[in-house]
Length: 301
Ligand SMILES: *[C@@H]1O[C@H](CO)[C@@H](O)[C@H](O)[C@H]1NC(C)=O
Ligand SMILES: *[C@@H]1O[C@H](CO)[C@@H](O)[C@H](O)[C@H]1NC(C)=O
Ligand SMILES: *[C@@H]1O[C@H](CO)[C@@H](O)[C@H](O)[C@H]1NC(C)=O
Ligand SMILES: *[C@@H]1O[C@H](CO)[C@@H](O)[C@H](O)[C@H]1NC(C)=O
Ligand SMILES: *[C@@H]1O[C@H](CO)[C@@H](O)[C@H](O)[C@H]1NC(C)=O
Ligand SMILES: *[C@@H]1O[C@H](CO)[C@@H](O)[C@H](O)[C@H]1NC(C)=O
Ligand SMILES: *[C@@H]1O[C@H](CO)[C@@H](O)[C@H](O)[C@H]1NC(C)=O
Ligand SMILES: *[C@@H]1O[C@H](CO)[C@@H](O)[C@H](O)[C@H]1NC(C)=O
Ligand SMILES: CC(=O)N[C@H]1CO[C@H](CO)[C@@H](O)[C@@H]1O
Image (tube, rainbow, N blue to C red):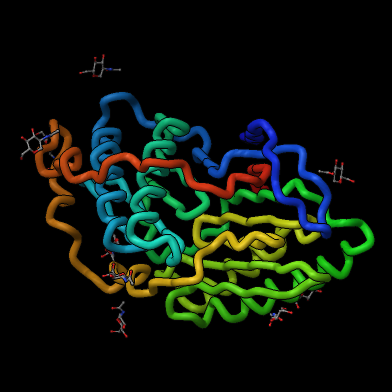
C-alpha cells in the first residue's frame, strides 16, 4: 500500500463567492508505481523501457493517443499515453515528455507504472495495455476549496447531473471524449471526461461509471483518474481549451504499423535500433498551469 500526499506552498487564487479560501496547493501529477514487482538494474527490461519511453514524447507531436512496445518476451515493455485533445501537438509533446521523465524518477525499478498529469496520462507494463480496460489503480483528488455550506447541496446535484450526462455521452463518442458546462448559483461549472479511444463503447461506459462513483462532488473541483479513463470538474476554472483536435487524438488509433524506429528486435545488448536521443523534442519551457488539487492515491481492495 502506498499513499501519497504531496503539498506545495499555498498560492493566491481568485476566489469565487461560491467557495471558501483554499489553504493548500499540490503538484499536478499523480503516480502509481504498481507495487512490489521490480526489475534489476541493467536488465533487458530496463534497457527496453529506457529506450521505449523517449519515443513516446516524439510521437506525441503527431498524435494524442498512442500505444507501442519494445523487445522480445519476456522482457517486452508495453507503453501508451493519452493526451487531452485540446492541448494540441505542442502541449501533448511537453506533457508526455514530463510524464516519461517523472515516471522513471518516481518508479525507478518498477515493472509497471502509471502517471496522470493535467494534460496527459502515461503507462507502461510488461503486459499488453492496448484494448485492455482497467479501472485500477485509481487516483482521486479534490480541490481543497470548499463549496459554501448553504449551497453545497444544490452544487453537488448540478455536478452529479452534469457528470452523469457527460458519462452517458462520452461512451458513444468516437473519440471517447467530451466536455460539459453548467451554470450554478452565479458560477460556472466545467466538466470533462475521457477514455482511451481504444476502448469499446461499453468498456468506456463501464470505466466512467466506476470513476463517477468516486467523484468528490461536495468539493468545488475534483478528478478521478483511472488507467483507462478519467474525469474532472472545476468551478469557475475553464481548465480545458475550447478547441478539440479529434484528428490529433485519433491519428494513431487506426494505424497498424509501428514506427520503424521502434522495432521488437533483440535489445539485450546496447540498442542501436532505437535512437530516441536525437529525435526527442527538447524539454518543455514551462510547467503546466492549474496546479491546484490535493492528491490522494486510493488503492481499491
Ligand atoms: C473544508 O471543510 C472541511 C470540513 O468542514 C474543513 O476541515 C476544511 O478545513 C475546509 N477547508 C477549507 C479550505 O476551508
Ligand atoms: C550497471 O551498468 C553500469 C554501467 O555499465 C555499471 O556501472 C553498474 O555497476 C551496473 N549496475 C549493476 C547493478 O549491475
Ligand atoms: C447522481 O446521478 C445519478 C444518475 O443520474 C443518480 O442515480 C444518483 O442518485 C445521483 N446522486 C446524487 C448524490 O445526486
Ligand atoms: C449560463 O449563463 C449564461 C449567462 O447567463 C448563458 O449565456 C449560458 O447559456 C448559460 N449556460 C448554460 C449551460 O446554461
Ligand atoms: C490537428 O491535428 C492534426 C494531426 O496532428 C494536424 O495535422 C492538424 O494540423 C491539427 N489541426 C490544428 C488546427 O491544429
Ligand atoms: C478509423 O477507421 C474508421 C473505420 O475504417 C474510420 O471510420 C475512421 O474515420 C478512422 N479514424 C481516423 C482518425 O482515421
Ligand atoms: C537475444 O540476444 C542474445 C545474445 O545475442 C541471445 O542469447 C538471445 O537468444 C536473443 N534473444 C532473442 C529473443 O532473439
Ligand atoms: C544526433 O545526430 C547528429 C547528426 O546525425 C549527430 O552528429 C549527433 O552526434 C547525434 N546526437 C546524439 C546525442 O546522438
Ligand atoms: C494502433 C496501435 O499502435 N496498435 C498497436 C498497440 O499495441 C499492440 C501490441 O503491441 C499492437 O498489436 C497494435 O498494433
